Length: 78
Image (cartoon, rainbow, N blue to C red; front, top):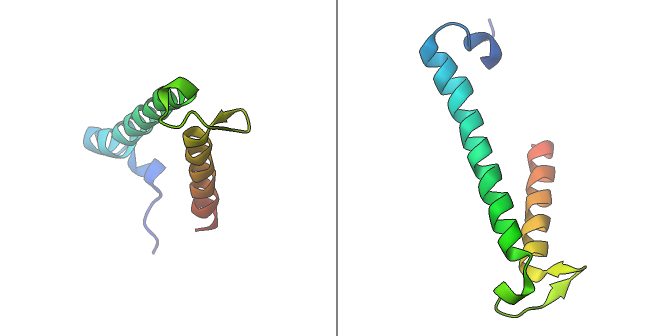
């Protein structure tokens, strides 16, 4: 017999709701906010060491976005 999916576990107790539902969503939102805040800072060529731009954005931001996209592809394949 297979275990119930996580969404069915959410309503079993307050503890499950917090640990399976609220905390992962809060963590995702926090990481998303951190990414956007750092991306806004990395977008300024004057704030980088080299000041080099690729495709109209700083090299650091281009590498960050490429790494994020590669991670999403690998996560999807897994």
